[in-house]
Image 1 (cartoon, rainbow, N blue to C red):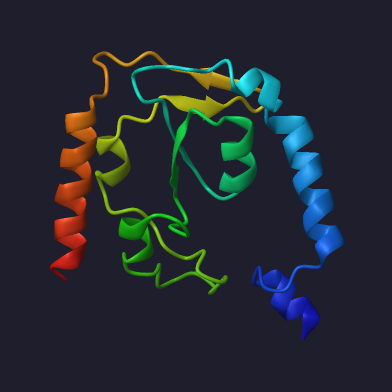
Image 2: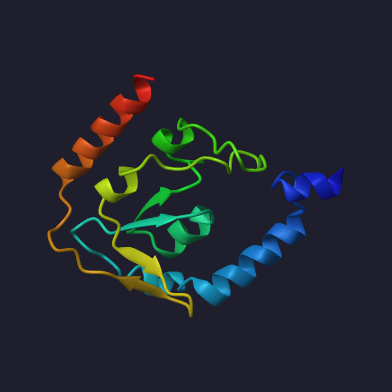
Length: 142
């Protein structure tokens, strides 16, 4: 039973979670001292699969879209992927066009650290409001 639970991302042991997180944070994510330097007025956005808590602590000025939908009301209310093995709410995907609406421009570099990609035009607060309204209305109407 325990093997099944852990394989479905439920009831991971504290030490397993802690060690996996430390290894990932130390090898992939910049330290917070570097992340606080990424202060930008044009709303930096990163779309990412999981690990949002550690990333958001290390990159406090980056706005995150959790592609699993665990903390995103639109993705969380999108249909589950029908051909996937159920993994504790990790089976949602963003509707087509949703993520692009927010113009993500921050990525993790596979060798560690982050990469900020300049946008052709800045993301504005009005665009963010319009994206949120449009997609929430689409999901809420279903």
